[in-house]
Image (cartoon, rainbow, N blue to C red):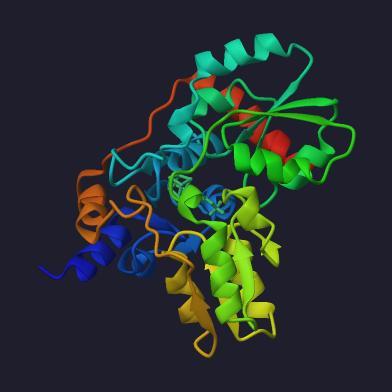
Length: 299
Ligand code: 13P
Ligand code: SF4
């Protein structure tokens, strides 16, 4: 069977949209109608008319799309594609944490489950965390679950106390500053781009700290010819495709095993059997939607 042909046929027959995160396998990115970072993907899903969406990414991203487009059938080809960082805080843990800081506002990184977003005042993504933290009213902010993103955002606000949850991305945590320093020494002409989930010591060495799609934009618009990319390797596919004359290096070859679970066969089965549909209680949809909409207002 020609999988690519069958995916295309089913997609057209069912009027489905396929979206893929920048970390997905190259062949999955190549069959998608749209590839982007977590913010762009959920926006795209709500803008498009398609009633069925195959979301090639991890569960929190597909849930975000469902919350913003509850009338659509959102399918996650691999139900086991979760983000370990999103699992580091539960709604109950956040409720207890809030009791310790009753005056604090809660900012939830989009890498959280929908019931955690429902407990937050506002969401943010890696692309807009700094703006959200700057613009939200209040002097105390609980930031969950990523400590590194919380500390990065805290660098840009004076007079606000940021209280981070101790969550982390196991993959970005493995990028170490010594390796980045060495790569810079060997390639002094290279521009260092880092994802804010990296350790603060890595972010100190970066020329720019950006979301995955912001890195793509930066690389396209920059005059530089060489880049050291501190994030998951899946991004190299688009970086190289969109900038054939530029060179992209990584301090360490790292793959997110959850992002790489989705194979072409899974996309095909997802379309064929219309699985695995994201289902959320109505109450969670409306409460988490408020936090996501507040984010869009603030930025
Ligand atoms: P982006 O929103 O920057 O694509 O990041 C998502 C993510 O999971 C990073 O690890
Ligand atoms: Fe989650 Fe890290 Fe994978 Fe992103 S790279 S999906 S934060 S585990």
